[in-house]
Length: 81
Image (cartoon, rainbow, N blue to C red; front, side):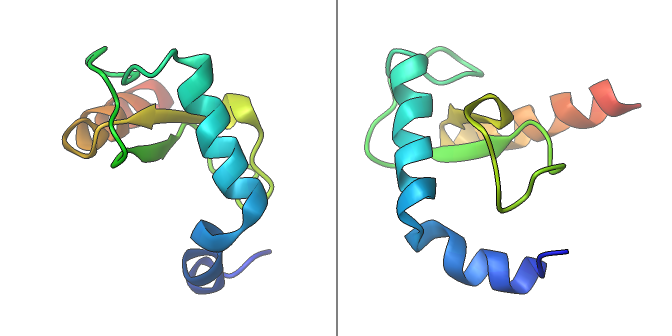
């Protein structure tokens, strides 16, 4: 399994990851998946699942505002319970 420390250190620079994040924003028409507000340059990719960590698919992530990320995390945790 991929080391979390290695993933965090290298993943943001990965060209596929950058492409995937841009595709998530395009799929959402530039809107936050939580609040629906316009996404600017500073957005975060929220993982819906960690099952394919390091090999994510477009349906594994959502683009969210940094302030909305904790809300998205809480929703994921409540769905897993």
